[in-house]
Image (cartoon, rainbow, N blue to C red; front, side, top):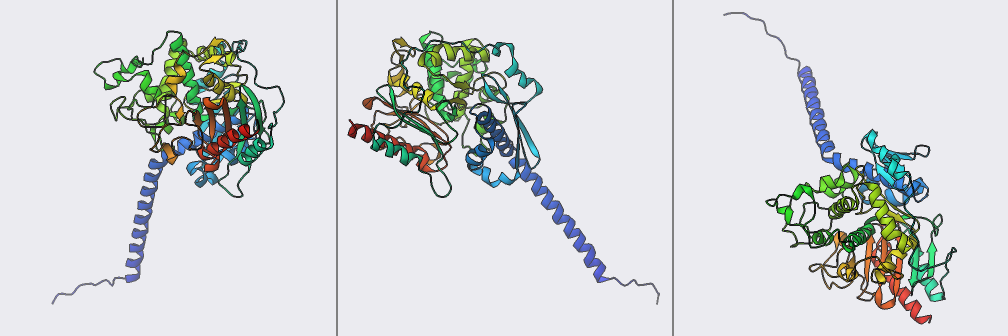
Length: 485
């Protein structure tokens, strides 16, 4: 019988080694999951940072509002921003006219302000030169207004108690979030302001973001170029990347871009995961990003709302105007803002000099009202024709079975749902009404049968400040004006 040595195994040491291995395995799995999560969240977090930088910059340096109040009222309650609010850090540099934002110390974005062009997201050191370019040093061309003045310098008080009550109701705030945050209301009847009201810190001369109401201004600029013979809505969209006839996007027309029926894969969900959000808050060249999108539907066959169509229209406008940001600015001032009497307007641009005609124009509530009057008066400013004859009818004509026209929302559709769960139209307002509409409750409502324009602007996150609230406001205003005669 052979003898040998036997070692006793310590079960506690084995257990300890096993625990360590399991711990390392769990840590490894958690790190891998965390890395995957960062990859998934990379785009929406970059979008969130860019959104904060750009909008705080615009409202601080163009509107002149308090950035902390803007963050609290506008940025923090928007979408998923409230869930990451504790991680967001923004810095307003008043000396450099810049806003820088980070999320948990990462995802740094910067927006810079330039006189005349508002705020631009900066992607490289060269981008800040857009604001300092020689062609922006001179002020935009001044043009004598052709439209009649709509009010004197002071705030116009409601002309009767029922009208006052209508504005009281629209400004009445909720006791708990989400809030309405109404900033401005202007009521124009028969070409004159008959009532207006502003929130504290906001006044007659405060330019406010119109968000997607800017799309209606893009409609006007396209109309002006049509009047000048430089464009035709039925022509193929003049986008060089689509010049090949074998490219299915070659068939997309300007009309289909205006009507949101291009069929391009530029889905907009405002979640930060969508390509439209990436285009606006991450990409340096917005139109360059949009023109690369593939088709998801044949042009003209389906309606799908997206900023992408209007960014492409903005590039078309820039190219037709002369190719530079300053050319767009001069065109807008000379042919639109000046003649209509819009006195305090800022159209913003991306870093390549393309206007963000999808969602980034600031103007006073009265200026938005003056813009509405242009469409109420069939494209005329006084005796001068600004838009082609028939353009207003074209813009407010129905697209497929929707509540959309060509850059304006209409009040004629009887069924269907608009984006984000909103109903088509305003059920308590005359059917001939049509309106510009932007995020957080920006509305320019035109009611031809009542010779009326109602503007409502705010930072709303509750239906009472969105289309449902504006429906009630306009209905109350119409009733008050009829009873007050």
